[in-house]
View 1 (tube, helix red, strand yellow):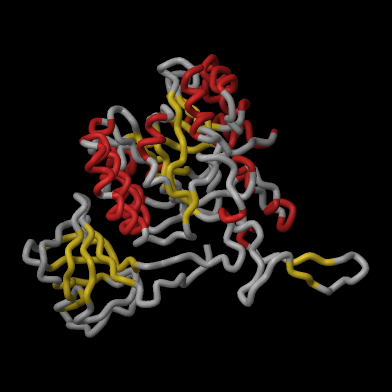
View 2 (cartoon, rainbow, N blue to C red):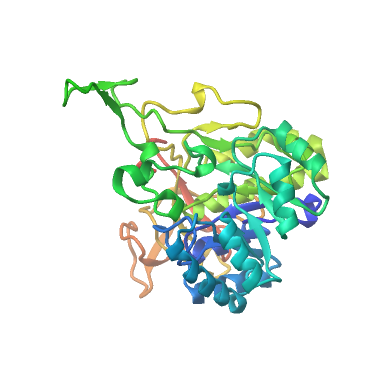
Length: 424
């Protein structure tokens, strides 16, 4: 998660990396003041590249050196067979020492309170937190923070804030993928393929194409709604509240959460940096925030997304919150790599992520908010052999850009078509 502390009046924002150390470090460098991650068990990211014990330690050390917190998810809805493993897992957390655990199941919460009584505990959105009575219940049990259900409006959140203690923290999503089911508690994946979303194994059937069949006419598929690209009746737009930060602050939200499950470092850097700047600008001067709105929207549009919605924050979503004709995403920029080393003269070493060639114009994305235009002047492998292009994924290269490129800068280029290349 990204925690915005000093510049944002003790508010914070959160990025879900759910992936690997590269993305955690990117979130930290590009503006997060807290990151939440999944371990190898008991989180809702069973198919993600989750963190081993050693990686969790390394990631937490990296974050703590930079004043950033790390929260570990343990938010499955547990079955009987899970409970002994949960207890052993929490014993490990004593040594790993994250800043908090994110939990949804009351039984799992009780185990955490007993095994690691001094650990800060947060309640996941999976617990369906829709009223101030629920917040008070968890507060009495010792929870520090509760994540609002996605189905709440800002007015409802404001009412919750008025009925709970000041030291009880509210966390809400501000950006990222939405779920078709109530607070993410979906059974479609379990029903179709036996992989339970509530156990972290969702196959995302909400993105699939659907038709209806009349029982006396097997094999005759009739579209619910269709154009030439298909029928996607459950496919939600992504949440984006970059234009509504003042309203979210006014609602009394303490923690702004960016959903970044299984996203690239480019996505995490782009979204974290944009919200970081927007939050800082608003706290410095609301007029500055309003003046920069077009820049924020332009930057957010440079990462992968499915078109945007404000979700439930301003009332019940209409049919416009769904995307019915496809399940592909908009992809305006391509991730080329992150500078792992720089010689201070415009050359940097990267692990190549996507193809680029000599003479191409690319953009160097810096953590401080600057974007530098650059032409690729030279590409060489680690042995110094020149290359016309970089077609091989994960190849280590030295690239001459002729601009001020530093370690941790991200290289990206504009997608010529602006269309999605893959399915979410």
